[in-house]
Picture 1: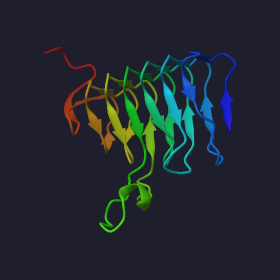
Picture 2: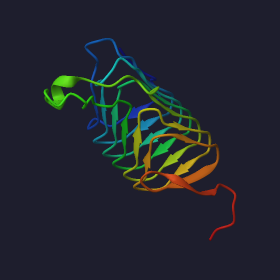
Picture 3: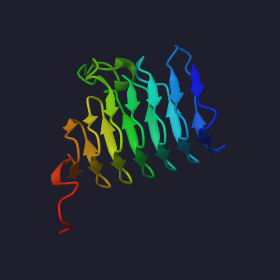
Length: 166
């Protein structure tokens, strides 16, 4: 089920797939989805809900997996991946593709006023709290506190919004 607010702006070159299993994809008011953004229902039954006034730039891939919730006024830079799912790999007698997925770690929650720099990867179970900033190239798999600045793979705290510049 695809629900797009009439004030959202979605590039004709974006690729938003409709689910064959009933995943809801909702895009809020005044949100901008740039060219070459891919939203793909895969890896679970979770919904993808994007709030108001968000900007999702070129090359971003969002899988539905165990669910993605993005709050209002979130900016996601180019080439980020939101992957709220984990492949099962334990059975060495079966190919990975044949094993399906591990149990959910809770999907992905990105609260309002968050910035994800270019090439950030956000994994299942990640919670990025209000106002946080994630530096380019980071990998987020746990909880990021409100207003924190995180960087690295895995991401770790390097500062706080409002701190004096280094």
